[in-house]
Image (cartoon, rainbow, N blue to C red; front, side, top):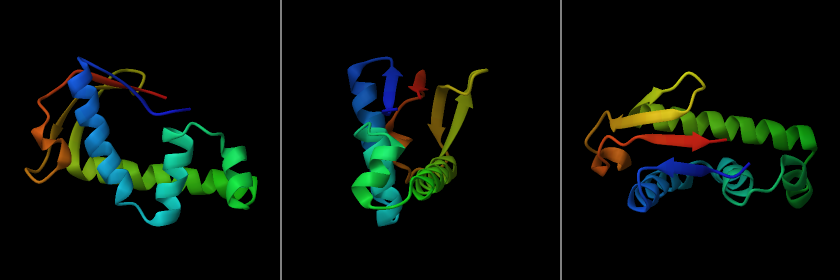
Length: 112
């Protein structure tokens, strides 16, 4: 399950990737690693557990906590408009210091 974006154009995709990646980089190391391995590198949670030498249930918990922490960071920064299935269709910054503040309101969808 890799993080994939479907946006209006390649520039929008690069910009969104940039500010989401910056938020991932701010996570505590164990959670950052969990997101990078499963969402960016696309490895399974089972493979992550093998690579890190932790139990499968521990890996699943770590990924879920990492996702929750990232979600909190995103929701603190931005307002998201979602479609019926939970896909992002628009976003805008809540604060001028947010990484997504330079992005215009963009039609977007995050495929899970």
